[in-house]
Image 1: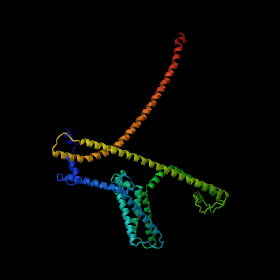
Image 2 (image 1 turned 180 degrees about the vertical axis):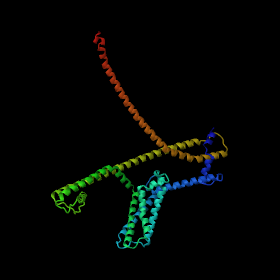
Image 3 (image 1 turned 90 degrees about the vertical axis):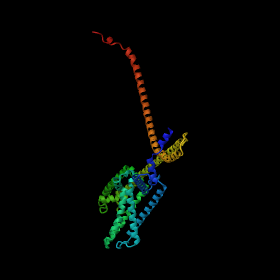
Image 4 (image 1 turned 135 degrees about the vertical axis):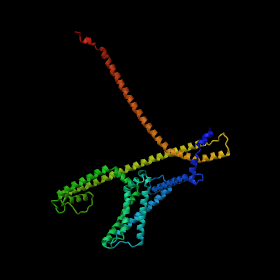
Length: 440
């Protein structure tokens, strides 16, 4: 019986051939099986490479990846930042040339830098488009990539590429006239848009978007209040200063510029009230402007604190889950090692030397797979434990609710008993109906 159980636990011959075929060609395996295994191995290798590329390009996406990919991701991020900064500096240098002179076009270093920048940004965009299916949101090979292409950050990547290709295509086609030089210079100045590419590299940009999304209602109220104050103050100052300065306060639109200038404390001095009422109203508006512009700062500060607290709570939850997972994995590993040690105790049956060698090889080949199975089941055990905790909490709530209902029923029963006790003497003292109403 023990021998049959050991034979049942041994892997099948097909499984052994498949495992060995991954290491090297087999003479006993069929060509069809070898080709199928080769295709599966190639598919797995391509998928792993695509996942590594997505992790490499998705800067600081996870702290659980391999250290080599992390270092390579940081180096690539630094190179992209340097390339973007050089493009912005070069575009600013081109804008500093006099309007009548042609920009620098004949130098070799400029051409090399232009083509290298275009090639690097294009390769990065293509690799992102190829590897985006590794994200859970874009798993479909066609619709997922289309969804990724229409994301705001993907559109920014595409917009960044447009000035480079426009400059390459139009560099030899524009005329030497002033209009052609201005057209070429305009294409080169569009390269400053590559600075938008930096948003991907900073997680603080995402936090800022979350803050604005969290406080959009409060900021909307402040914006509405600002518009109302500008329109009201411009109308009021128009009726106060137009009779005294008709050439200065000509319309309500001009007075709106004065109101914005006063609220923001620009101090240009191009429009100044001269009447006493106008100056008094200007003083009140300037003080109110100081109060008005402190409100958005307080709103954004509170939103920043809330977002940071949420991030910290998420980090704490992840740390707790990771510690639970590690503890469960260690417990399962110790349990699996004890089970394997128990299963590997010497038997009282006698075997031939060939059978002993075969059993040793089979136990050696199955041990890593058993360990992997126990380690993989740790996450499912954690999820089941969470579900059990949730069911226990709901059971406690239901039990408390039943206790409250039982106490209420006991109170109602006590009140009924008291009412019956009060009604029974009155029923006994009442005379019969025949005594009240005499018979005819």
